[in-house]
Length: 226
Ligand code: SAH
Image (cartoon, rainbow, N blue to C red):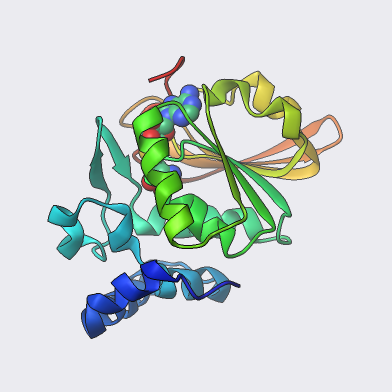
């Protein structure tokens, strides 16, 4: 775990005890709402979420809620980030993870503390640029990112041990299924707006095991570039 974030850590300290106390409270809330994996809770306890959102909203960074990040997009609710991460690593920590929908970069940063390499794809260049800047400031070196339509995945780097979609579609794009390694796990919010569910697939050869889990609310998975 690289728990020293350089400039970001300094900035987090700038918020003084307030940030740490707020993060501790957030972790207590997540635990009360069913998040069990101590590895995930530990990362959330140290990750400065306030750096991933606009300063005007920073005081709300440790509420268990999604927040706007501009361009009609949101940083996911901490509970959702924690739950998806937990689902992804439950039966062994994957080495190489593909994320669709970098957004603020928070989910990728959380994953980067747990897995070997995160590959993240975002269709809106402005969001990607901001996230990349933040990864650099935080000295996170195991996230690779790409401006593209995530529906095509990242063929040059496939196969992945795990894939996570942080935008919702009706079904998993075919290219992504093909880029998941045998034995791999894919977590995605699936379904129409208003009735999406977290869904986990495990691939065993040509067999796909599907679990439909909690109800969630995500921005839509779009096609093309933003
Ligand atoms: N993981 C993000 C959540 C961002 S919201 C975080 O932690 O902040 C979902 C993101 O998915 C948005 O930024 C949106 O632009 C992006 N997105 C939607 N459709 C996409 C697609 N086809 N390819 C890549 N990114 C997509």
